[in-house]
Length: 408
Image (cartoon, rainbow, N blue to C red; front, side):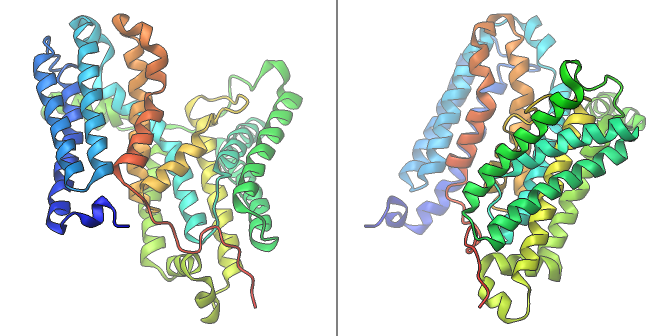
């Protein structure tokens, strides 16, 4: 039976896509109009803009872009609801709480561990191995990064030890998935529980009730004081507040994005990884070691995910607590799917979740909205679900992902 998308003319599909995207943008604009620096005191203008977003969504649905259209409708409704809440808060409270430079700086902080884990997941899944164990590998990196920094007195050693722990856990996952041909979803789940048990036991056994020391060697910040001198002064000041004191790992994540893209899509090694993930039998026929490529890819995945965990413990909060990754590995996996297994797409999704994670706590600080605290805590997850399920539609994974390969 043909679907609505198949029945819709190609011209209607092509025309409804930009309308749906515009609708999402209008929904965001509707909420933004009620916030600083605009802070409209009447809900009329945001309501008109939100209604336009809903109309664009309806147009896109009628044109066959159902997912995109409903996402635009949801954006319009959320934008209007947010504007109504904003008009109930005083301008002084909004200006004190909603500081865009602070929010954008925090966005990069929250997005960085997701970026490392998502890029790591890309290497594993492009080679054909599902890696839902990213959460456990991040957790291993977080604990052993802090432990290594504590025992060696060096954050560099802590980062390397954390990466090694993530790679070791990934090697366990690779052995079960590649050689024993176990179910990769079940194996990844077991890896997550294994990491939770190992880090929880060692944390209690080594640090007990006292927790990690307060003086853990920390990954340093990179200070770019010259940003503040960029004219005009308002722009320079804004850039300085956003980028002037970011952690070294934030800047290295930008480098990782470029390197990962070049390796995956511009080198023979990347071609081997992608061929093994798409058609391992054909790759084996031309002499590519399917097992070798998959092992290397999964281990690389674990090391990069652990790098994100090490950033959490000795680059962000400068301590370790049990289960401190709190589901970030699963969000990174969702970001990877959002980005269609490409580095810059995954980074865009990480920024989306990072922005919502930074924005939600700010909203809770407005007195008039304090009763909606639980609702704001769910905002990052709701936006991620809308993005993954509504905006991008159905992502097509590598053809051989999740399928164990047996050499003949």
